Image (cartoon, rainbow, N blue to C red):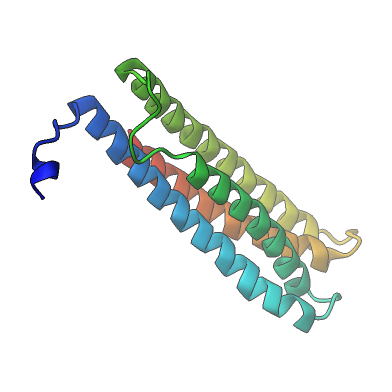
Length: 163
């Protein structure tokens, strides 16, 4: 105990950066849980659905999204630095890193709006009378709609908390 109390306090910028990285890691943990939930639930349901039904394609697409989100969450968590940064890491480096992270989440929120628009297009295309395999388009559309909505909430929330 005595040793810890004699250590110098971290500069304010470093404490802010460490808090930012901890919040980022926790947020990416939420994304990882979402990914695993998609993989477990849709991975379980996929072989139990008929390929001729839209739910089969919904679960198939959810598995794909779950895999991608799991990889992104894992890589992101491994890249966070909630402890002491590397030697030579400056306040300017911390500020640039925090700004870039915010910009990435803002860009992702824009992509999420694009996903929602693609989902609407898929659903509209599935409803068209001349569509081949409408159940596939409908299932994919519902999955992209779900994933896009979650990611829009996730990315805007992360941007807001990390700004």
